Length: 403
Figure 1: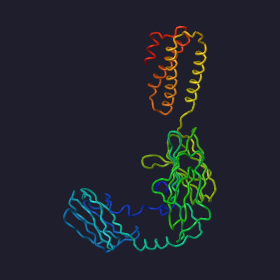
Figure 2: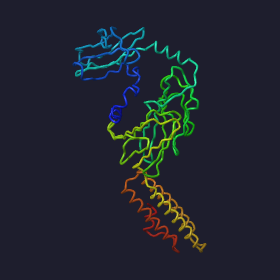
Figure 3: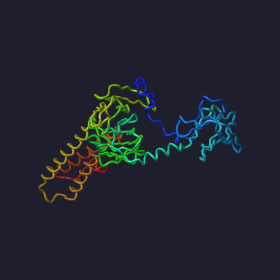
């Protein structure tokens, strides 16, 4: 996705604006590569982040029950060559009393392996802890370069995700002059805070609240909701309580989906993870300024079949009431009439369920047609019996009722 955005923005958006994963999360994970000699393993040793290499430090590679030791070079790398294919390997280093270990993995028979061992930057942690203890001051936060809107069409509308990077560039916690709250677009259902978000965020119905003070750096909040679409188009209007430094929208391309917005001045389609996405970008959006996104070509189910089915049921119910009112013979076989009426009501329910199943794609067309024909045939037989002086069903009627 970073490469897609880089092409779209013509180099105007630097990759540095997008936060890389925490190196600690990648520590000790072997990664096969083809830029090393066959059977080689390269271990990079860093402290805290990728720019802080640890040079001239011993790294151990456990090869089965044997241990090889190599000191890191100026780039923080220790390389082990000509390892026996299939041997069980594990990289180990001890930095400032902290023992770092990789996962166990087999020596490669082809190509090589790269991995990182990431030591804790204790000085950085100490400074961050001191800054966090500093009393909060009044200040501003913005929605920084990680912020984006992701849209994925569903059967009856869209799923919308707000991935918000709330940035505090000060060195102390700040409290914005107004609470950081906003309402999801009209009609949103199932609004929730996604896993991985800051504990400062919570949802109250369609309202999102992020409590202050905001610590220095980034506060990530991820919100998800469903928006129903009654037709093939949908308009989203949204505003945020902080300035959006750059509007970025990513929509999964399904069918003839199109994205339009007066605030988006660049967009293109691009492949991503085996699918096609529409990536749109715009400029800065001021705090509190609404912006609109219009989606067209959405997949949706027509309401016509449901309306027709309900209308048909209503007509049948009216006709049944009229037919029942025509009976003037109290000596008629009441039990048989009651059974036929009960059977008729059950068929009404089956008809509605059948139409709903067809609308939602839960039944194949041949099976739907056959079952619908069967229901109408049986209903005609029942009404023929109810309208007749002799309400006992004939052989064909009994067959239909048995179905």
